[in-house]
Length: 589
Image (cartoon, rainbow, N blue to C red):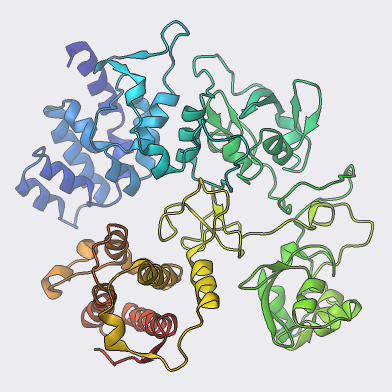
C-alpha cells in the first residue's frame, strides 16, 4: 500500500477508535474474527473475556494494539460483512474510510455491497467502462455483478418484454440500489448540493422535482414536492409518479443526490413529518384537503372515567372482534366508518366493517355497529365512548378518500415484524422481506404467492386423506417438491412466532452451551439445509427440528426459555400432524 495512503488511513483509524469501541457492544464476532485472521493472539482473546472491565474499554484496548501494527487488513476485518450486520453502527463509521479505501475485492463483501459501491462511484462521461481505485488500481465496472445476481437478488432485467410487469417491490434498500445499477439510472454523486438549503432537488426513478422542507413539516399528506412542470405532489404521489408506487416506502424510493430521504432525515437535513396514515393505492378522485382537517391517523380521545372492561379496549391499538363465526382483529387507526377504512384483518384479507359483516353471512349492513362485538361489547358502544372515532360522510381524509377498493397487505414483515421494502402476497394479507420468507421470495415474478397460500391451494386441489397416515410412513418419504414445500411451510410457521427468535442463530454465544449440549441445532441452519436441498427424506428435517426443542429442554429446564421451547414444540407438532395428515404422532422427549 502507498505509505501516504496508509498514513491517511491510520489517522482516520485513530480518530474513530472511541466510536468503534461504542459500536462494538459484544465480543462475538469482532474479536474472534481478529483472532482467526491472526491479528490478535489467543491470550489477547482470553484477556478480552474479563468481564470486570467494561466491554467498551476492552474493545478500545484491542484497537490500541491494532494501531501499533496497522495495515489495510485491519480495516478489512473490522468492516467485513459479518461485523457490519452484527454491529449496525459500524456502517456509518465505515463511510469515513470510503473516500480513500474502495475495498471492492474483499471476499467478505456481498454482491449487493459491491453494487452499491458501483452506484456511488463518480466517473466522468468520457470514461464509462473503467474507474480508478486508489488502492486496487483500475477495475472494469462490467465485472462487478455476477451473471446470476439478477436471479438471486430480484434485479429487474432491462431486456424483459415490455408487457411483463413485476409483482411488487416493497423490496429491501440494497435491492433498490441493484435495480438502479442494472437499469442504468444513476444520479451523479459529484454534484454539489447544500443539504441545509430549504429546498432540495429530489428524484424518484425518472421523476424529478424540488422538495420544500417547510411544507414537509406539516405531514406526509402535504403537497411538498413540485415537479419540473410546476405540479405539486405529496411524497406518496411523487413515488407513484416515479413508477415506484408499489414500493410503498417513499423514504427509500425518493432520493437527493444519491441519498434516500430516510438517510437525510436520520442526519437531520430534512424534517421527519408527523406520522400519518393513508391507505395504499391511488384514489380515482382526490379532493383538496382543508387546513383545519387532520388527514390520516387520529387517536380517539376516550374519557378518563371508563369502566375496567372498556378501559382495556381504550388502551390498546387493536383488539379481537367477532360477528357470528367470523373472527378478526380491528385496528383503531384504520377505522373510519362502515364502508370506509379497511380496519379488520383476518387470516385471508383486510375488511371494512360492512365487508366483515358480509363474510359472516350477514346482509343487514346498516347494523354493523351492533352485530360486530369486541369482548361482547358492540362497536356502537365503543363509538359512543369515543374509543373508536367515526368519520362523518363529508370527511376527506386519506382513509375516506383512498380506502376503497384497492387490495390491502400488511405494512410489516410477517416474520421479523419490521417494515421497509416488502413483497406482498397476491392471495393473502401477508407481506415479507425477500429473504425472511421461506424459500427466498422470487420478487421478479409478475404474481407472487407466499408459502402459506401455496400449501392451502395444494390442499384444496388434493384434499388430505381423512384416514391419515402413520408417522413412520411420512418420515421415510423422499424429499420431493411437495414434501419440501410442506417442510418450508412448517419452518415458516415457527419463524413467524415471536418465541422463535432465541432459536434462530447459532447458540455458541451462550456461556456454557457447548459444554452441556453435544449436538447444537438452530433454525437458520435448518433453513440453509432446506435451501441447499441437503435433506433426502422428511425424517432428516423433522429430527433437526425436534433436536432444537430437545436441546432447549435439556439446557433450560423449566425456566422462561424452556417454556418457550415447549410452546414452539407443541405448535410444530400440531402443524406437522395437520399438513402431512398424520394419524398419530409419537411422543418424543
